[in-house]
Amino acid sequence: MTEPAKKKRNITRWIVVLLLVAIGVMGSIFPPVKPVVMLPGEPLIEHGIQLPIVGEVKFTNTILTTIIIDLLLIFMAFSVKRNLGDATRPSKGIAAVFELLMGALFSMSLTTAGKKWARTIFPIMATIILMVLVSNLIKLVPGMETIGLMKESHGKGYAKTEVIPGVLSFLTAEEVNPEESGEHAYEVVPFFRSPSTDLSFTAAIALVAVFMVQVIGVLSNGVGYFSKFLNTGRFVKMWTKKDLGPFEVINPFIDIFVGILETVSEIAKIVSFSFRLLGSMFGGAILAMVIGTLVPVAFSGIMFLELFFGVIQALVFGMLTLVFMTVATQSHGHDEAEHGEAH
Image (cartoon, rainbow, N blue to C red; front, side):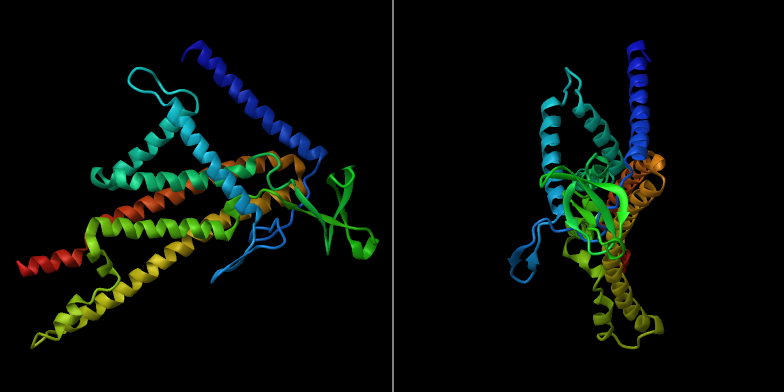
């Protein structure tokens, strides 16, 4: 490694260390206060939009953050395209990082799905990973889930200190119980909140992933792909034969039962995808809030764990999608067996 590269790496290390120390020190001086803890996103506007069938849809802080993430990814895509290298010049800046990341993901797709389907599956898998990754990591941005609308709490809350009366205030670490002290207590509804902590977002991503698994299955196997869910071929043929053996009677019913299990399995994938990501990220947010309140010095360590689990969960989500899509491209064994019998 060259001397300038070594110096650059050392500087980067020192910057990371100083940031972690600064978070710990600031957490000690200004202990974090608990935001409003709600599983769904908190509405930023009192009255939502009334839609047919769906009902009232409110504009929440997770929807606002999702829009910001979408715009950020679009901006990054154009930036990468502009700075992407070619045979005569290397990629620069963020394009070089993305080129390395996309190369690793495509290599994983090629190894798992093979040459025939890697180029079809890769864009879907990579998009899901990027969306989930940014959604997980955006919670580490300063001000995320801490800056928002201040409202009076009906139960326990915190004392309010006004910096600019009526415009800018912050909550102190002093907890207030209005029933005992008679003072007003306040809580914060954040403007921005990680979409990964909202079940609506994780369920939507899960639905897209499982739906695209079915699309890949149809592209690879045609309409016959759905025979794995509704395999009645041998059941229908059974009634046209005479002198059936015991297995020829039982096997058609086994096929139908297996089809039911396959259907339940696809529904279970949606539930599993949704709650795995939600549980990890929402639980991490609650853990950071509790530890930050009880032991402010340890707040930087919790943020490091949030970074680690955010990356891991995005990779797990994408890799599982890749595996399910690869499995969907495989032909069904019972179809091949029937063709063999016909020949």
